[in-house]
Length: 362
Image 1 (tube, rainbow, N blue to C red):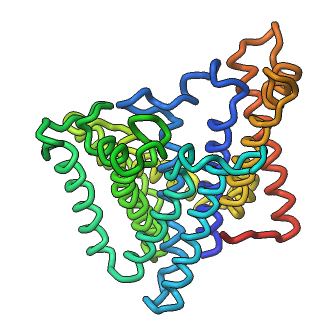
Image 2 (cartoon, rainbow, N blue to C red):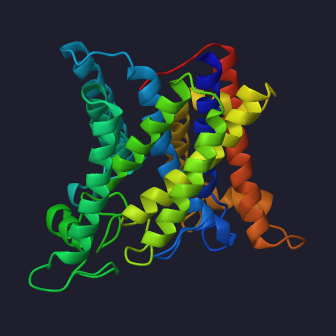
Image 3 (tube, rainbow, N blue to C red):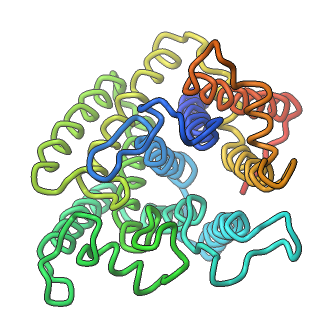
C-alpha cells in the first residue's frame, strides 16, 4: 500500500509541477507551443495537466475512502474539505494587494481551478462511498453519453447547438446566463458550470485506476497501460463527432486525458513498484503537499503581477527583463527558464516541508 501511495504521490507532484510551469512563464507573449493551450478544439501537452490532477484526485479517493462507511462523520469530512477548496479558490479570485484587498463584486470570477477541484472531489467521494465500481462505471458512461447528447442534439433557444465558441453552445450559453460577468472570458469559462459535469467523470476514471492498484491482481502496470491506450484510441474516434476540447471538457477529452494518465501512471508504477527503482522523489515531495504548493504558487504569482516597480512595470516583468531576457537566447527560452526557476523554488519548498514532516491537509 505504501509504495502504491508513493507512486500516486509522484504522479500528483509531477502534475502540480507542470501546472505551476505552464502558469508562470516569463512572458505570455513568447511561449513554446507545447506550453500553450489549444485555441479551441484539439489538445496540447498543457491541456493534459488539469485533467491529470482531477484524475489523481479520484485515484486518491479510492485509496482514502475504500473502506469508509457512508456515515455522518464521513460526509462532514468530505463537505469540510470541499468548502476549504472552494474558499481558497474564491480567495485567489478576489484578493488584491491594493486596499480594500478584494475586487469589486462585479469583477469577481466565481469558477476556478480550486473551485472545480472542490466540487469534483465532493461528488466523486460521495459516489465512491455509496456505490460499487460497476454502478460507478455506469454513472461515468451515463455522464459522458448524456453530455454528448445535451451538447450536440438539444436545441439552444431554438437554434441548432454547436461545439464552437458561440452563443448556441450549451456550455457557453449556461455560463453566460448564470454567471454573467463572473467568468474568465466574456463568452465562456474553462471551469464553467456545465463542463464541471464531465470533469466528475474524469475523477471517476481515476477511482477505477485506484481500485486496480489496490487489487491483488498481478501485472497491474500492463493492465493500466493497455487500458490507457484503449481510452486514447476510443477518445480519438469519438473526436470525429464530439471534438476533443478542454474548455468544454468534452467526453472525448475525458477519455483521451484519462488514457494518457493511465499510461503515464503505469510507467511510474512499473519503475517504482515493480522494478523498485528510486525515481521522482522530488515530485513525491510536491505531491505530499499538492494543494498547498499550488495555492502558494498562485498567490505569490498574483502578488508579483500586482506589485509595481514603476507605473509601467510590475515586479514580475522587472525580474524577467533584468535576470532572464538576454540577446544571446530566444525570448521563448528566457520565458521557459523563468518558469523553471519558479518551479525549482516550490520544489525546494516542498522538500523542506517534507523533511520537517509538515503536511498541510486541505
